[in-house]
Image (cartoon, rainbow, N blue to C red; front, side, top):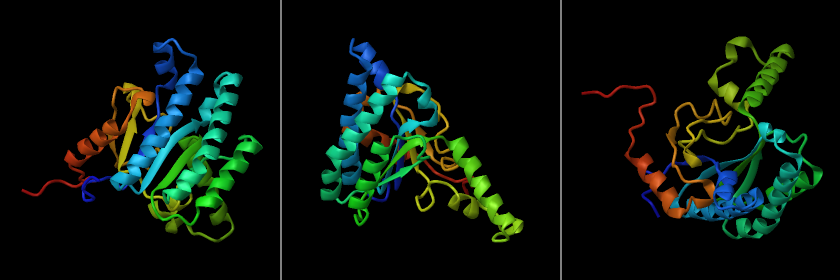
Length: 239
């Protein structure tokens, strides 16, 4: 296990490159997504072993609905299979499962499996695995504004009471600390509408490997790079 003093409490990952990995190998995109699911299992276990407390994975964005219908259906099936296959392991390894994002229009069979695994792992006290499903940060922020506006209109909240803490509690991630480290695989250097508010002070790491090739040693390297960075949160060094 890495030194707990330098391990990020919360790691967020944009799992990018499944399709390009498959294309490079002359395989269908489904092969890339299948291999990517194996990396989720591997990295989740390893993150828990390293002392990470929260692991948030960008699994399906609101923009992903624009992909071909057969690919979307395939992703929904893979997600369900993953949850069914992982639920016992999550329970065994003391990992709690959560999701962030909008429920609609996720299929009922996906929502039912999500709720089953959440309930089965709700008492676990180890790593918290958070899947961002049907998630878009701009929409999340808009919904937070609506919640806060409704509270003001109903007299439950005064304008002068609105601060960062109030706004954070209105987001999907209420109760989850902001990420310390963001990893995006495939070499792309964008955050793609992911946790825009929450990533304000996160360290960013962009390895060139596609997600299906991202292994334990790569995750460990990301933590090592993180440990060497100085996080000042807007402050300056005192000489």
